[in-house]
Image (cartoon, rainbow, N blue to C red):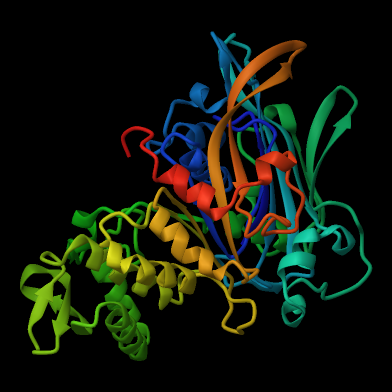
Length: 465
């Protein structure tokens, strides 16, 4: 679970900071920077498992590598990307060889600086300038103090007292060079890498519980998932092929294979999925998945009260979206962060309330005991969805934020430069204070955003949606 992020030098973010709850909603019109936040998280997830060149040239990335650096006008852009992420991790970590360990610290902060400079061939290249991973001190942990209820403080309590305060990953000068070091965190000793020679993060190179806290941070980041459902992919049967994926893809592919796997693992889960779907779509009583041997595929069907069956190919987009979210809510393999772009698409206005409730059910309730941790971050331009979610703003696990572009003057390498940057502000429940009592880098007038202000702005015609 991500609890805070700082970004500088990436796309429309300049000295940006934001706090997250288990269910975080970011509202705003198009071109306000909502999707850029997801792009930043997506890049971090890729950097946690692959090299810089592959991460920056991924086919799904919006923009070429140079365009990911903040543009200052003309041919000038930022030379560094800085990311800092605070995380709450699950206590237990596994590796791919059957190793299993318990974390001593579940509150970690990861910081990464990527520098763009010319290589020996006078061509712009990417290098790791700084990388660090350290525990967050309890006395400095505002998020835990404000968000986590007393009954759940065991999630962040250190298993053992004492030990070294040295970061799990650190960057330090060694003469004329800079080295990134990983300290001993189990059976193995530490390692060191020259920063200016690193073509991938240290985090991405760790695969064993011998470095359990680093591996846990890596596992958290690569588990971040990004949904942008395509109705054609949601309705598509799953072909039975070697190596068939049986978890839902970003676009909604493999829904049938995912359901088949869930039913094989735990038949009762299919009953729960059927009950949940019926609570949102009363006309349907059962979800079934058929092993269509004749066509070598799995096929999803919904059954109504009259025992009529409807295949996923003929179901509406809204029905398929609700079905997919019900599947995710009941899938034991779904943990960690889920980022969802505009979940209201294809949903009838009368069903927005149901969609809001379903989204909330996909996130962790700290008052409940059914962990592992689950988190959902939604971006939306729907005032209806924002209005429904606003009913839960007394719940510390729910927060609403408002994205907008703003102009500011900044000092860039000794020059005063006018920038158009993304600001994401907490929506106030009233004028007495922010929903989250955590400092954010905005002036008091900027924080005077109420729900009515947000809804009024969202309902204003600001161009194509």
